[in-house]
Image 1 (cartoon, rainbow, N blue to C red):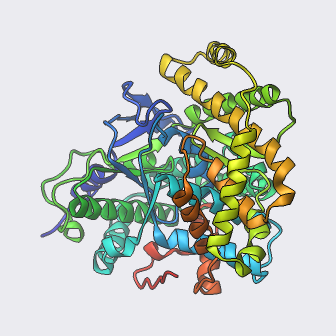
Image 2 (image 1 turned 120 degrees about the vertical axis):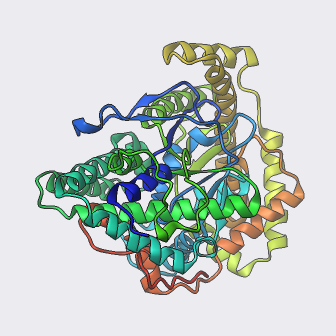
Length: 491
């Protein structure tokens, strides 16, 4: 059946256009529409529709881990989380980078960057926020090949001006999301601020090249659409198999891609997507960077107040919320690895349990609940927070005060315990809402041991993890979902 350009593009409208903005208060915002702002005037009138919160979110393959972590507070509920599915291949490549760097096999000026990301993702997995799935299982190679061919056919039917405008908007949108100034405090903590600033310059330069018509807009759009079609296909397969509702997470490129599509959905689906039932409308969401910026500013204020309450000058934690923090030192795996290699899980867990018990015995209530509530009210007024956000502030201030106490006492008692035990305890208290018992501590120990197991990843696979999405800064590297002859393997 012959397909017109309009009917092909119309299908992609159903597959990619429906996007929502995630707000900071309890998951997905339901406050109406929000204008999609960017420097390309033709897109200023686009709106991003809101939908009710799904059972899960699904990150595209090869997504930006750092940007995701920065925006994670928008996914956290007061007493629970909305899980995010990520590609197991991404996780295995990250773990491989951690292990090989500890072994000194791969040189890098930023040795602690992968460790910090690994600690965060491990913590998110333990809390149930992240679930790893092998995307290949839900994205057959035959479907991938047909999707890639169809995307190329769509792009070949567009005129240069259409592609150029969409590519520029996608580049600038991703630049704001992946390299915006709102990430600078986290990038410092991850110890890759210089690399981040350099990448921001390069992506800005690439967007400028595209706007002047000397960049490769076909490469930009093909890679972005391949990434989104892979995510959408995995999403639908998971929904069918597990009986849940899933929304795909975008990286501020969705509206730009959708801007190519201006006709209502056609009843004639492209042959490459004939296995998809109906259209995939309203299945993609994007983080609200303004909300993340606001959350970060409030979190920094809370950290200062918590340090004043405890009476310390503490830079031990980078705190995201009442259920999520990160050890600032970023050397947990380095400190723990040599001890863990020669110690048993049982002995490490037993030692960690003793240390945590002593920390809990020493922990004190520095100020009354009334004082903390007063400070939280002041913060809420200063930042014009709504009632739900005010309740979050109280919980976060209590959690950070508790973390500050832990960090003070860890410093006092740490010399009496092994680095392995301290690493387990640090991971435990990073989730201060949970009350851990012996079995939980043992599980935490096993998770740490598994993270440090040898990897079977090749050097090429580990390097491909570093350069995923490199087309955004002018390089021509491919990831598995862009390759019709894909052959990724996992450890």
